[in-house]
Image 1 (tube, rainbow over the protein chains, first blue to last red):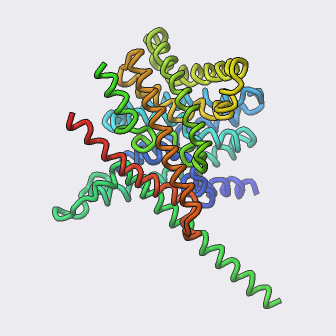
Image 2: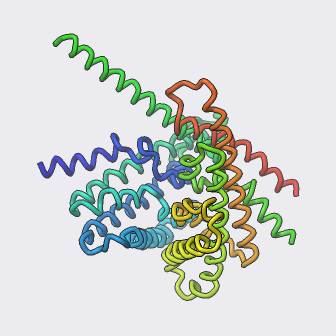
Image 3: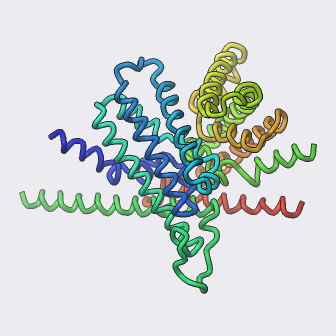
Amino acid sequence: MKKNQSQEEFLKGIWRDNPVFVQVLGMCPMLAVTNSAINAVAMGMATFFVLVGSSFLVSTFRHVIPKQVRISCFIIIIATFVTIADYTLLALVPKVHKELGAFIPLIVANCLILGRQEAFASKHPTKLAVMDAVGMASGFLLALLSLGAVREILGDGALFGVNLFGENFEPWVIMILPPGGFLTLGVILLFFNWFKYKKDEFLEDVAAAERSES
Amino acid sequence: MDNLLWIFISALLVNNFVLTYFLGLCPFLGVSNSLETSARLGLATTFVMLVTAVCAWILNTYVLIHAPYLRLICFIVVIASTVQFIEMLIKKLSPALFRAMGIFLPLITTNCAILGLAIFATNRGYGFWEGIVYALGAGIGFTLALVLLAGLREESELSNIPQLIKGTAMNLIIAGILSMAFMGFAGLFSSA
């Protein structure tokens, strides 16, 4: 039972409650840094670290933090982890750090992270909270990667800097510029709506068939 | 003087916070369903941005030169508490102004547009007046984008749109087209 529940918390972040495609949270970093797949991965990893770390701390200390000042405490914990991530990226991959620029400190303002602390980590035991954070962060990473890959392939004709189409490909430059971010995410959300619509239709058909049988 | 003007125009149009930097998207998509609400949110955001610019300048000049690694935590704590304090002050001094933007103030204390403003102003090494002008431009630019989207959304309520595309997907595509339109302003700088 215990194991099933933590598995459940992990999986819901990746698909059913995907933070970006279903809950539409954390959009600012999402759109700003996904003009290439490598930037998207760096951003995703940084968010992963911050989310898992702060979920771990918040749920460990959930009985110690007074209820009235919990939001401020969460923010300070998150800001600490973001500062660590910022300096780590600067030391390890200075080039990527320079490209992401101000958007690494802005992870603090990602509503996904604070939302998970408030909605989940502050109410559940450490193990479940970490599983939930890992799931949500993986879902976020996956979403960033898919958006980054689409934009880089269309806008630059490459993936992770490797040229895919050869000389004759005319890059669709608008995709790596800001409007491309809005348009790509809009189209992906449209696809998710369509998928949900089809699924609801299917479930209704099944229910109707069952009713007529009984 | 010329320099200040360019900072203002750049923050207002060319590097519009919402449409080019993707900052403050949550209120942009969440609150933009009526013109009046979005104009008030824009006013409140501009106000908080001005407060932020002052706070960031004071912190950068007097505190953070001694401890740069505390930058993020300092910004958040100081900006949030200053906004809270000014909110109380406005409530006491001018109930009319409070009614116009009061409910939004706690919501936007540390959204990404506010924090982004503080960080960008720091990274570019803006002085006091430059920071103020930058905040003014960014705030008015935010309001402009919000009001434009709200207007388009109010129009789209009346037209016949397939159920499937309604909601966030359509708003994002509208925002994409707006963003393309704003790209045209980039020409302002190369010709200057």
